[in-house]
Length: 415
Image: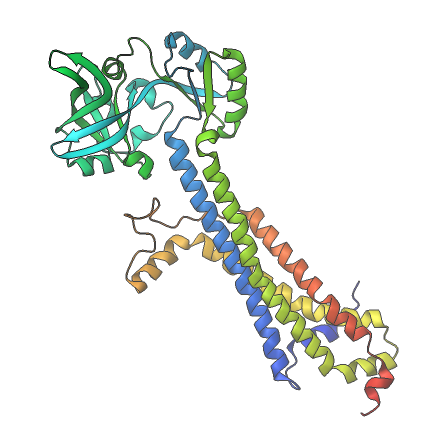
């Protein structure tokens, strides 16, 4: 498309500073803006991908992908259903559970939590909470010994440690000779877990399944069965299929109903952030257009001479397209290289910045994730690079067209 003559003149105009240094400065500023915009865009997208991946692993690592329960909150004959659900497509683990809201009391300290009754032998098949223990173990939950595992924030609020006692108050009354009283039971703290999410560390406690059934007077029933899938994105289709198989007597839900809006919000924020950061590249492209327009005015006499030698308007247009494209392509390539390097070394750069400013960017007592993760996707890098190059080439069209419209006679009249 471009002959050697057009390439020669275009690249010569790019680095020529003899006649107008201001134009060269604007061109350099355009290249720098494109480079910084591409670098920041790749880095920020990588960090947001890292946050999304970290949150997904933390949240979906401790919640069920699919939950099967009774419409009245109780599931009878669950042992038979457990065997059937284990054999369903995509299911790699199943575990029964009991779940109720209770109050935990230690002296004058009171904390409302979601108390879950679990079977320690099955819990590890559907949740990773077992592997996020600060002290103790889920294996310490033994039937009729009334042990309890607390979230780290719950234990801190109550001021208890493994071996201490806490009182569980169930919001269901019982009639006694002394009157109508809530049911209470003393439990021994046998473990403390830390998932890294306030929703679980500050609002969740676990006891043994049969102890929970007796505490809530469920008999042989449970609240439901949790399922873990080999593909968490198949949760909706698996849940729909199970609902059709089990019928209306059962209620089947999946993780997207409870946490899907959160991940959709993260995705929307990532798209909005990408558009905002691409405006940085857009500002640089406006500078590129301005520098090319000034270059066209500065080289008007040169263009007129080239036209008198027989160079067609289209070839003049290509000269300035090459000049602008060199700036855009070079800025994009450097920006991509720096963005990739920075994205892959965030864990090294951030501690240096924190040491310089003297504080953590994401304090552990404020944010769920105290570190800045990075998950660079090469498809994002390629898309950003291609989009930047295309936008740079498009930005050259109008100045190049104006150069092609210059009339030799008018331009050389006063030369």
